[in-house]
Image 1 (tube, rainbow, N blue to C red):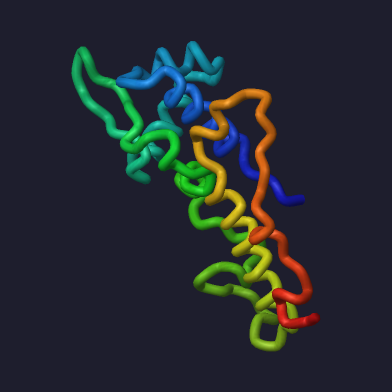
Image 2: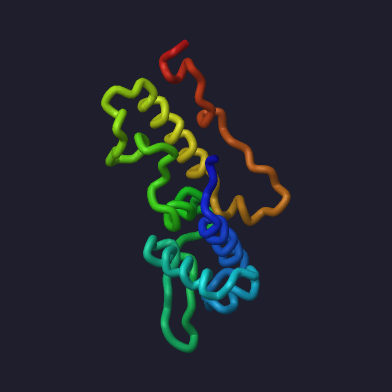
Length: 152
């Protein structure tokens, strides 16, 4: 089953909340608003800070804030900050650790599929996620056909 982790899902919720509230926010305030436990929020905020999606400030007036505008942060960046490099299969990774890699006939196809998923997630911004009830649309470039794979 293709599925992002609960932590990445929560991370998306946290980033939407931060973009909606804007400005400096404490982990405790984010936890209260999102109903996500404080330890989980703290863990996710540290990952986002390490990925340079958030800036942290210490002190009484400290907290976390977005480094870029919501329109400049992609869902791919959010997920990869939590999960690491997106890879649907072992052969989609930069460093392949698969026993049949050298004679597999579909490795290149999986890489194309992985690229399409990454492009779709890259095309969706945090700003788009903030608009509740608005359906997301994808451009046709993200649709893979046999023709684009050279199998017309």
